[in-house]
Amino acid sequence: MTVNEKLIQFVEYLGTSQRKFTKACDLSEGALRGKNSIGADKLGRIKRIHPELNLEWVISDDDEGEMTLPAERINPELKESGVKYQIQGSIDKIVERKIANRFDELKGTLAELVANEIEKELERAKKMKPNKT
Image (cartoon, rainbow, N blue to C red; front, side, top):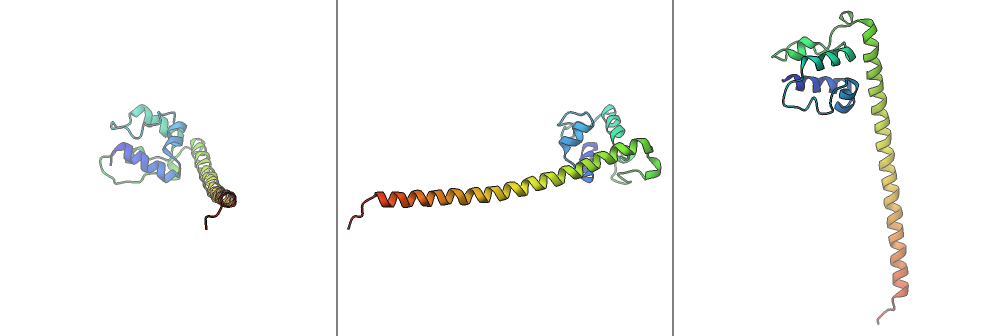
């Protein structure tokens, strides 16, 4: 896997979107989708926000090793910001799911209302049109 592919895998592990991840790390929105590997300066920004990310895994040529560092290797002060980001990602997922569910409910209700209005209009049109018999 490339560096960018590994970072995308890390984003999936966090349970957030690439957009939110790049914004939190002060990267351009398409930074992970680029053809060129992300640079050391950008990896540094990511590491400041996500100290749990194992940079040795990210830059290694093979897929061996662990994506994240054990807790004892993470600075406790920096770990807190990563945890907050993960919690926010979880909250965002819940909110997005609730919005999607409500949207589906409203879409169904709207379809019923439109169908009822069409039926009423058809009934009115039938009453206005004389029968040919």
